[in-house]
Image (cartoon, rainbow, N blue to C red; front, side, top):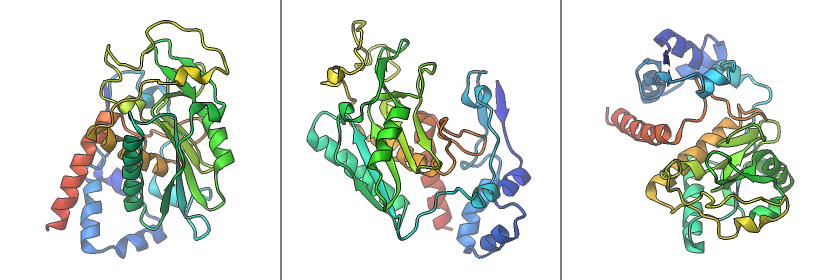
Amino acid sequence: MKVIKHSEEALKMALISKDVKLVSLYEKFEPKEKLLLSQAFQPDSVLFKPITLHSESDWISSHPEPTQDFAQFYHDPHRNIPSPQKNRIYIQPIGSFGDSRVSTDIYMKWLKDYCEAFYYGLTVRILEPVPVSHTSCAFRVNEYTHNLQIHAGHLLNYLKKKKSKDAFCIVGVTMIDLYPKDSWNFVFGQASLTEGMGIFSFARYDSNFYSANYKGKLKTAKKLLPADYSVFDGYYTPEITSKLLLRSCKALKRWIEEEVNETEEGISNSPLSGLQKPVEAFKESCDWIDKCLDILQK
């Protein structure tokens, strides 16, 4: 087991650096803004907690990637920035959500409202849901978890064709598990920096996904024909609980953020960035709320 922990000086350098322009911007912050940001400089704060690597199969251990500090991010010429001409976030639901049209509409409205509140100034539009068959993507049954999976890369190709000229980005969301290539077990999502688009799945945010009685498992081994999408007819989608909704909102927000740093190979999960596991992201939201309330009351 290994723990990745950064010193106060390392965190401050990563977030502000010695870049003259960034230091100047930091000095213009209000006192309470500086107070909130200063929490990130504390090695044990809720913003950058130590990361525990339990085994060599953990993402950071098995997929080493270079880190990125804020100065590198700020000066990246390929950084995706909204403009008056590109100020919309499009969300494309793929497959079924919930057990009825009503629950789907409510679920999507929550995602829309959450993103519009977080990305203030950008308009979020929910596109009409499409069945898996409309995407012409490949699919398979996971040999370990025995649930259906759809190909993330093929879904990105589909989203590219649907992206409007006024889009800051387009994000596909689905309740079906994803895989990026045949040799991979699964992936939470995948995004393209250059195309401003991403696809991710809420499937593994269901509390019962890893349980033995998960309803999404196919009961019998079934040989799937490449173009026979009837296997998705009536396929299980988890109940939309408050916990799943919160995890989904945070994941969607995080994925839109990560599109700035993503490559076409998958998610960036360096010690200073990356998408957390569902339980970690859910717990962190409570810490963030407590911290913000504490700052506002001072």
